[in-house]
Amino acid sequence: MEENKRIAEEEEEEVWSWGAGTEGQLGTEKLQDEHQPQLLRHHLSLSSFGPLSSLSCGGAHVIALTPGGRVLTWGRGTSGQLGHGEMVSSSQPKAVESLEGYVITHVSAGWNHSGFVSETGCLFTCGDGSFGQLGHGDYLSQCSPEKVSYFDSSHVEQIACGMRHSLVLGKDHLGNQVHGFGSGKRGQLGISYERVRSVNLPQTAMGLDNVQIVSIYANGDHSAALCAEGRLYTWGRGFNGASDMHVPWSVNTYLSFSHAALGWNHALLLSGDGDVFMLGSYGHGILTDPLMTTHVQHMDEESDKNALWRIPGLNGIEVLQIASGAEHSALVTDDGSVMTWGWGEHGQLGLGNTIDQPEPRVVSFGKSLAQRHLVSRVYCGSGFTYAIRTPGADSRISVGSI
Amino acid sequence: MTPPPPFNHLVKAARNPNFLRNQLRPRRDQMSYDDVEIEDMEWNEELQAFTYPCPCGDLFQITKEDLRLGEEIARCPSCTLYITVVYNIEDFSDSDFKNKNIEPPKQQPVAVA
Image (cartoon, rainbow over all chains, first blue to last red; front, side, top):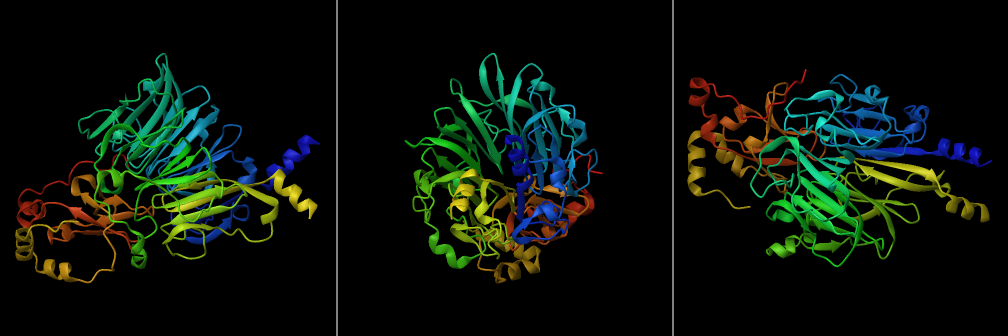
């Protein structure tokens, strides 16, 4: 009985995508932008791989992870970031065959590179390596995942891939350590007070001694890490034109955070109470609509530039999850709704148009299944968005009782 | 954004008749997405252009010829967004190209088939 129910739920998992699609990153096989959520079951046989446990979306490619630790990739592959053994794009999900012998537990998609962490704590990378962001000690690109031998004697837990850099959360006899490699020009590696052009072997980030880091994040030229007590550290490119930070610093607030998401000019923070805050990007959502510039605040003080602000328009709605593209943002509320805001030129907000939005708006997935599903997760690539919707016990009960 | 000193404008105008026209050309009432130094752009052999990632997933692009003419704007073919390229026009001037045949800055894509 329990087993039957589980199978039924797996069958009902829905994968939706929208936004920029010309590189095949939406999985629709149409190679075009979509302004509204597209249900992928009709386009591709994702179901043959079973349910997905998580996604990571990069510049124009997607890495999907199954509960059994298999890895599927699709989208732009011209730098080898799909790991299929050739430098070609694919609009269909394909298994990364060279990882079949491993149970993969964590993945990250950067601008044009990819990282995979196995259950046994090994790290594999592939894709663009021109800035050393693969960590193999060279500047070569790879079209199949290659093991990063630097971590042979330690246990890797997470990888976070940015535009031209990578962060790794590892565990060794000294405890949790954050490592950086790739381009360091904006301070995004956190390895030195001096300006570092690039490094092609992992180096330990500074300023995080005696801090138990539990999550790491990278996007654009930004880096961030969250510690067990809920403090967020950021480094790399400054927000709102503030100067770059070459070593991690702690965001100055009494709030405690459970999740973070980085864009190319902003960071989203989810507090333990389900409130969402933003760091940076006073222009978020006004990239292409000059009429909205009234929302731009003039900032002179360095302290203003680094100030956190609460996302407007949520009015106490509890937020369960956040995600961030280059210039757009998404969240999941406790009633299962997906809301999006920010830059909308490619339909990445999924609101049926290309208009920028300064405040979160609810994405419509059509009426048919809406009441029967809770959206569990939302994921953003640079200019596109994915949602995985699974049936929720709560919503089923409420539907049944009507 | 701070305008460059007038002297730079004069130099550019003298070298490139299009420069002043470009300066005066009404662009969409939109800010440059970012200022990017030429050394941070990558030479793309296929596109024959210097490129930089655009937040839409495509690439901002500017050709050597554009740079030689004093153009500062790199555009994305998929978007309305553009970036301002920071560079020395002297590095791309006619004589340099003909005499020294200078190679573009580092960070060329490697091993791309």
